[in-house]
Length: 490
Image 1 (spheres, one colour):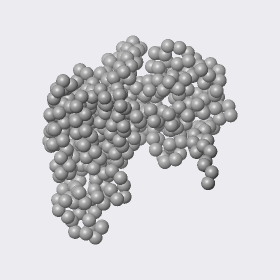
Image 2 (cartoon, rainbow, N blue to C red):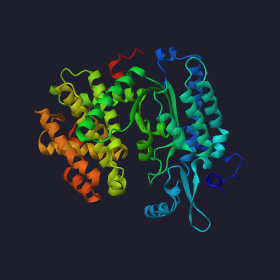
Image 3 (cartoon, rainbow, N blue to C red):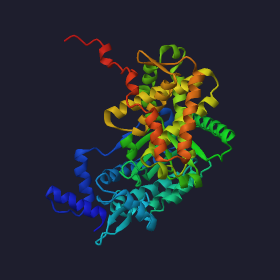
């Protein structure tokens, strides 16, 4: 009996029922009563939809079907254990030396009758559901559609056919290589498969997720220009080899599975450093989520946490542009993280990596900035967004790595006295002094991520991390709109 069948049998046993022939379907129905299938849909702007051909609209609809079905797989996956419950980190490390499949992100691990570890590929674990949801058939149909009409895209067609085969044979890398090496971003695209390790407590195994979107060509072109400037600056400063990185800003129409669960503003793929080095990487910006988050959280945070003297003359669009560029630079910066950082720093690696990328992104934004105001906006928006991470952590203990890093940056500058908090607002006298201190912190963090030990990361946090430093900073929440509307007379 395999992992899915055994887990489903246990589920039925607890429910007091006999196992049914289509157990996965019944489990999905049962789970759906307690939790909606994680899917988010967005409306495509009319001007974008009008620009699509008949074949592209049909393709988009077929890809949405695929994405929706990945949400089904993820919902069941939440009830499966990637590992035996009694396994330890040490056992995983030792077993991985003998069997590389143990540490593969694409396998489940269980014990055989003698207690030895064995692996089952994820596509085998979900084989029946993949067949029942006709995921392969839909991907093949989408591939056929992508090769029709004046807007046909043969590169996309090849990718979709290879991705369909990956759901059958588990060769995920081949289809990844096809789209990562495309000369141009496809107009319509889907990510569908196992990615990202947030569902796994040991942070090794991937979960099902998907998104579908239509390329925003003007914004993508602008983002690519910024990316090129950032990489050119980095190469000039360090003489390091420039990684192959692309940016894709898209009008997302659907997110499902893990991506919908976390409602990401963006994601950088592939996840494995080895594949990034081999084929390059693409950073996605999900425009509907980014714009919604910007209007509802990031912009209000900037307007309320930064002293008014530094906000004079700053437009919403200026804040949006800087915020977007910082996100792009942050994701590009992951390409420069030392590949051994996790092995060396252990539990400290997550916050050190994110802090390093935040600081490197700020350095790049300073270098590319066209004015003093843009330089100020770079660190001002970073401080403001740190308040959001503090609130998120206080509310549900989420995104601890960002909370730690942002708190360290603010407290470091407070200790150096280049930043002050007056009446709950962040202020400064000399922006160059702030930039200098952030650069100073970057040098410390850079050394740790390159060749530091856990004790080095601990010492840095011990000196500069203050768990409540952001408590001093105000964040005025948006006043409910109904307070501004006069109710009708009864």
